[in-house]
Amino acid sequence: MGTNRVATRVTTSITRHPLVWGVGWSIVFGVALVVAVGLDWHGLIDWLLIFLLVLPSTIATVLVLAATPRSHFEAMSSVFSHFLVRYLALVFGLAAWGLSVVVGAAISQSIQLAAEQREDEIIGIGIDLMLVVVPIVAAVLWGAFVLRCAWFLVRVRGWAEVPTADRVPAHLLGTRPALRRIVVGLAHPVLFAVTGLVVAIAGPSAVGGTLDITL
Image (cartoon, rainbow, N blue to C red; front, side, top):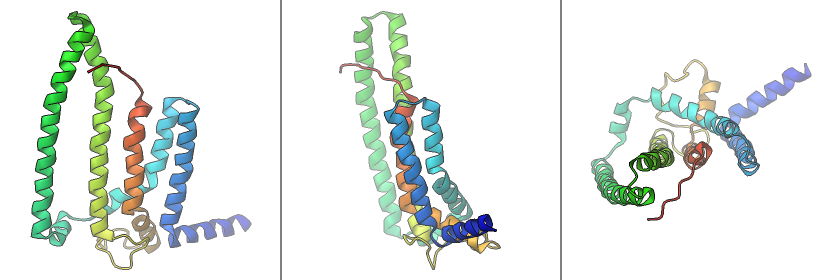
């Protein structure tokens, strides 16, 4: 009986304050991740803690955005925001292209100088460099993806912990209102953005690997 009462109280509390529980969950595993990194635990433990840290908000966000049709966003978009987003995307793409050309040329020259023109060492250094650069690039792209999803969450469900009026489709867990309340509450844009960016920051370090090249 006592156990059932505790479980009922916890369930009720989660239903009423899903964001508070989501933040608490993230803080607990965030602290555990800091301890694991500080004590240099095995990389698999780091990844497990990262996975658990982002699990609630990520699942909730996927459920909410997957249930929301694209037409919802088109209906909520103004002509100005439509063109502004595409303009910023073009500027970002042009800057990324220019930076990739400059950095690529610098890295190529640095690898050749570091290997002193020995072909086997050039290939080895290039592979080592890719093992370091690819996780960083993937993390940056993941961070951009997270911020994009968080922006859509703002437009779909707003900033409130449990919004009284939202644009989340009614068919999402329509027969289970308590679970729907929890999912919408956990799919908070700030919670998802913060936990998602933790992955972007901690991911490359969890992969490991360093390479020193003087440009």
